[in-house]
Image (cartoon, rainbow, N blue to C red; front, side, top):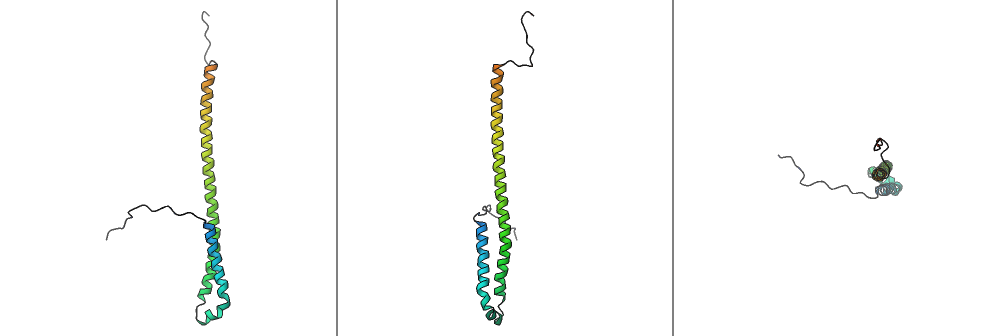
Amino acid sequence: MAKWTPKHEAPEPLEGPVVATITGGTILWFVLFLVQLPFYGWFDDRDLTWWVWTCLAGAGLGLIGIWYVRGRDAALKRHAAAQEAGAAAQEAGAAAQGAGAAAQGAGASEAPDSRAPETHPGA
């Protein structure tokens, strides 16, 4: 059997309001837990209490998810800010180099080079 290879490149992951999505899902799991809690006896009679505890587990894991995606979001924002600062520093450095070269060119035409000895005819 031949090994399967993809025919095209995988698409870029979608970015969206990740923190809000995870928070909304966590709230939904917790609300489902609270809604089922008054009917715990009914679930217990039918041996279906795992439904109640699954909702609580979803809410608990959602809290971990909120902590994780908030940290990820903050790291992405720090990385973007560092890249912008680096790009701005490069642009400023290039502008300063251009200005320094222009000043050297202008200075060379106005004043003689102080390192070169002066020569006087007939001396």
